[in-house]
Length: 358
Image: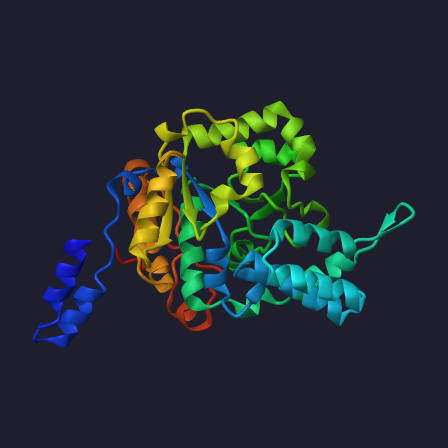
């Protein structure tokens, strides 16, 4: 900490304020053990931090609490809850009850059975919450998705805890079709884990376009958890690849993630995974770094602000893909051109590492 303070004090008397500003915003260096990885060695884990950066105007993308509140608001708008029920859910939210349990109870309430038929009110609420995401995506967030897609096209796998399909929407505008998978489709999940479905995104909690696949607790995935072949292939990924956590403040505490990857994997401290986080509070950052080491996760700061993540991750993706290009003679990179800079999308461009600055 002392060295950080010393650096700051040296910057104050700088004669040229522009030089001082450029020094203050000097980008974080890329960690050698991460930037020298090859894309096929990586599994990118996309959390709520990425979705909230892509579409910051959508509260449901920012956090569990934001999502449950949005579903509750939609349910009230459609008169799906009695006043007493609505007040009870709101009270649980304010009291910070276990949000997974609150969400589970709300989903059950919005999916009542009549005989053998389950209603689709939950589906209606989901579509209301996630309606028109395409129009709400911002340019900085698209830069982040571009880097994720770039690594996918070079061989990285992608899984997410998010219900949205922002990455799939972005990829479609780049001419790349990505399939959304959830854990209810064991055959496809097995193929994904065996790297036979590289252009698929595994949504471990489900995706809003398939409400029947949305499950919030590992108990809901009994078929997958009992399928030893699927589980072994999934866990093998955690033992043999490097997971890179993006926008995943609490993902390793997620019960589904633990059931899939952590509980059955021995000697986790011998592994090498990476978590990119914002270094806001020095003490909290150090505490997180210490706590993650026994899980085999290196905590890395991409900067002091959320806005620093797209630029950092772009440099990282370019470094890895350039290395792959030099080694294998191929890398995929959906670069932004002038039209996309202005409009946000370019449907046909598939240039190789053009317009990138590392």
